[in-house]
Amino acid sequence: MEKEQLSDQSVLKDTKLKIEKIKTYEEGLMECLGDILEQHIPHPQNVATTNKKKNASTEPEEGVISLSEILEQLMNKVLSTPHDPYVTIDNTFWPPYVEMLLRYGIAVRHQENNFKIRLEAFC
Image 1 (tube, one colour):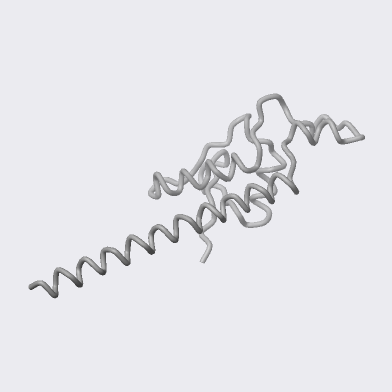
Image 2: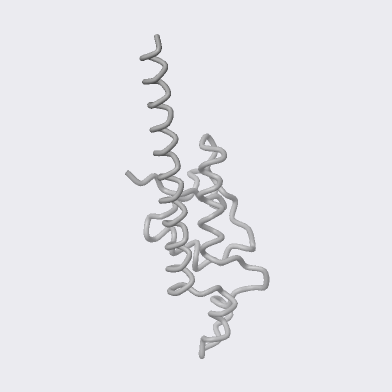
């Protein structure tokens, strides 16, 4: 009986350690992703000020969110409601960012509603 309790406690302790390691690893990955996005994909307002050609169709509106915020919303939606992982696209989503996510297979559109997207399942 005591051996079973000791083995249960050791399994529980090992599981807690593994969970802690995974959380630490996830935090590191998220920081790296944020750094990469910040360095290589600027915020839409910054893109408008650096473009020499002003094109009305690609110029972002006020209040648009960054690509990292879009990805964060998509990831949170998948984790919070896996049965309905779609996020509704509104005027805060900059269309070039949405098109980039769709073109490179990071996100997919809803089959019936083109104004909803979700993260693609990566295996």
